[in-house]
Length: 257
Image (cartoon, rainbow, N blue to C red):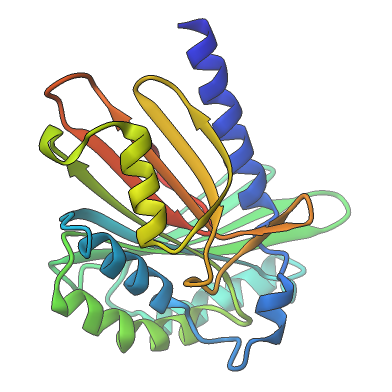
């Protein structure tokens, strides 16, 4: 049990480090045209490939973040928040702060099939003020309406929130019954093939597998050890006869798994 927990902690730390470096643009990102456009196509491609394996998606999400380099003091942050409130007048806004930390959160009540939120986080020191904006959209199941919104509505939302191209993380989650699982290893290999992905590293236990990989299907990527990675896949089972949870993310998983 202790060995299992230690491996789990290491995996969480690795993902956290990759997220911290997520705002650093890769060479592929730098060279892409129309770089301010949201890469919703990554999530759409991911969902289509997973559904192509006769797997029904239970949850999906896009998480996008940007460092606000033009924000230097409290007044700049207030101006930015006020501009967002004008763009999203129906969203519910709340604020919280202490001596070193301030954040504003907005939740959308405009849609019934998915949820949207924006969070602006600011930390203050004697030398400077650093601020980030984080946007998330998530929903259950995968429908034609989901694809339609991601292809159309998301573009204007990103344009209103972000000042440059944010780092975007896309995830899908599903449950597989034991009829779809031969072994975790075999299932993982099949999924990597469907995602046209090459394994870079993996963590394997009796009831859990996590794989970091690279695939030409996805635009978003992160650099680590001179290699580009843009796919993370995790499978966890509770035992014989129990369902197996599948989580796939690009460039990495950003939800609990």
